[in-house]
Amino acid sequence: MGSVFTWYVHQLSPTLVTYQVTKAITGADSITKGLIPNLTIKIGNEDVPVVYTDVIEFSTASGEYVDSAEIAITFPSALRIFGSGTISPSPVHSITCRTAPAGLVCRLSPLAPGTKYTVNIAADQGGTPSVITASRNVELVSVDTFVSNESRSWKARLFSRSFGLFAAVFVIYLTGVYFAVKRLTQLFRRRNRLAFVGRLVDSSGTGISGAVVQIRVNEPAKNKREYEAVSTDKEGDFLVNIGAKQQGLRGTIRIEREGHSTVEAPFENPVLFLTLAQTPPSQSIASGAAPCLLDAPDMVPKTRETT
Image 1: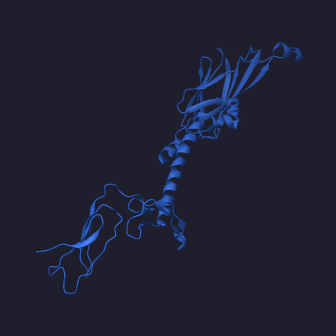
Image 2 (image 1 turned 180 degrees about the horizontal axis):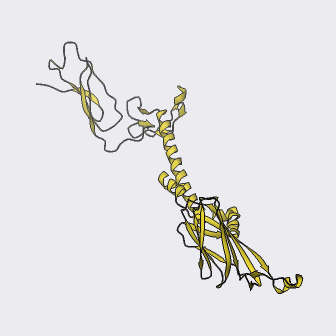
Image 3 (image 1 turned 90 degrees about the horizontal axis):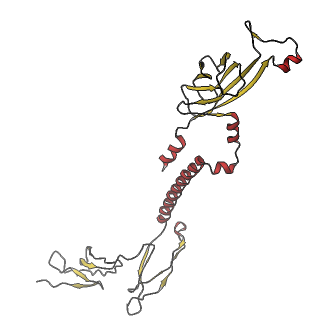
């Protein structure tokens, strides 16, 4: 789960480059000539009625480092470019442009957050150019679009695809952390819980079933708690904080102690009550004394005859 979250946080995202086009007009059109008599614009000996200047500014807003990218600046129709120029942010950055049928194709190198490049174009047409790129891992948007996206309401961000994916991954991550902490807490609490096993009988020794057993521990402080009430089973047995009896249980128990007869007997009930008889001083197992056995299910010891 942690690897999925790390992948989402560090996955490669396109480098975002914004652009802005600023236009200026210098010319001797009819209105300007009416204000300034005898005004002319010449390039060499050629009269030029109007010069349209476009300033295109590129700025890397976010994303990974990109070695280079090619960006096309294309006008609505073929035009005459009187001149063009470029500005790079430093001597170690470069921007070079070549002519295209309806504009320029410029190569910017490198792209990293904070870098800015400028292209100036003087032409004979005033149409607004389009700016596009086909470079890998580069996304190009206008400044207006970028500002509009950044100023969207929190509701729009909340329901965006990227935020939804992040939220889903984050919820899964938190869910895993929650259950891990819960499991550790349960294990820690179990260390401070005690287990109780017993049998409730009447004066004749018969088990009493259906009785409610409630246990509360007051001391020591670390074990202080009230345990969930349980009921005695048909044999009068109760188990507190230890689970339930295993159905179909069968096994054998053997007990040895110096000075006492050895006990070995089968059992079907995990609640065992045993009687260990002392060996008379004149007898021992080594001299041929019979071991003491318990009959299941009452576990009453008896002596097996030997020949």
